[in-house]
Length: 171
Image (cartoon, rainbow, N blue to C red; front, side):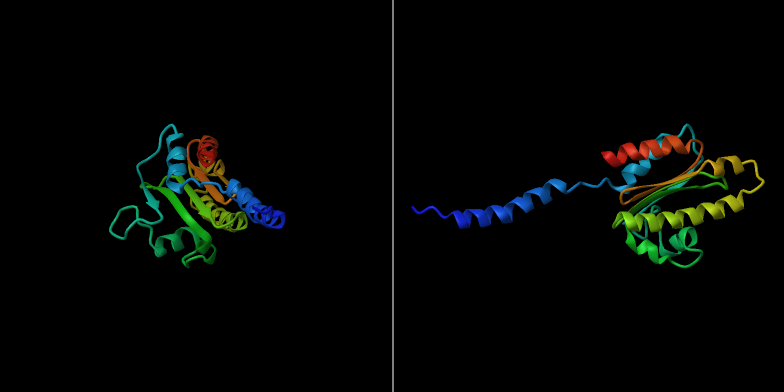
């Protein structure tokens, strides 16, 4: 049998990049798992509702375009939201500042753009609770991007929520 070094070299040049690429593939944590960790980190929370991407229209976890437009788009569905692959958010059932969200985007740049939607949402919440007994709670709210994820924490202990979210992102 003849030795074919050029064929082996070609095979090596084709397979080596594929090997490196497969080593870089990372399994992403779903948004609902991260949201659950964030909510569990809170000492207490008022009753609320969780909304999930992929929930069916007849399920309580269903978030229609109107709800997303009201929360993140000033009444219009925000174009930035098209870059959200997965989301989970929890809203308070009472008029209290207690809200958590996890939004997984296509890319880190998209996450930055979606984080801006969350900052605008927080600005509207600040305005709603201005000069109320809850204004200090709203001021402690935190929004963070982690790679392609956006974490939004508004509640009793937003720092603990973000720490729990970071741990859940790492899996």
